[in-house]
Length: 199
Ligand SMILES: [Zn+2]
Image (cartoon, rainbow, N blue to C red; front, side, top):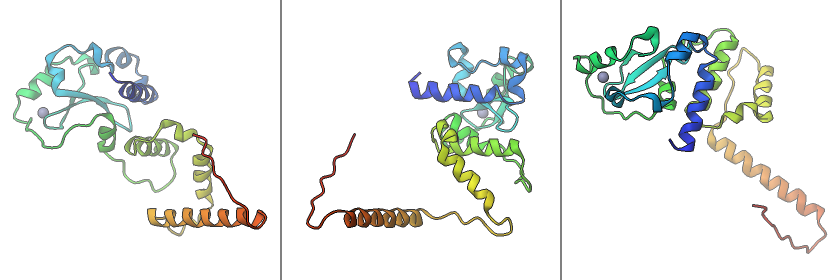
């Protein structure tokens, strides 16, 4: 397993252990997220997943993308997976399976919240970080916290206008121009600037 996959898997397991199902001791024992423990041929056709809201473990069929009962769930074993492959329900789908991030993205959605709920907020952050493939460390970045805090001052009766990529680029451009002008004004006339990058 490459280090990036190992890191994502580790983060996934840490997240799962915080979920409703992840706190179940029997599931902790029988649901092995570590792929090294899976020897049966049947695993060539399945990937392990968990519902984003509850952590309920499932397996997803690589061929048809249907969910099947996880072999470690109530000790079901691999029979439901084997039966699924033989069943008429299993028809190939063209989209490729890209792993945990995509699966999390495709998890059943909650009904949009009408009022704030801390659990939903946490899951929205998780979904944002995993679907955009950003670092989990982003969540603890002071700038991210400040951004979220600032939105609390918004008028709840008007839409929160999120700027487009173009607007943000223009803002950056203007900011750089302003900074350059202010630096130049502080220098004596006819000065030269040499810029050194520390990288
Ligand atoms: Zn299938």
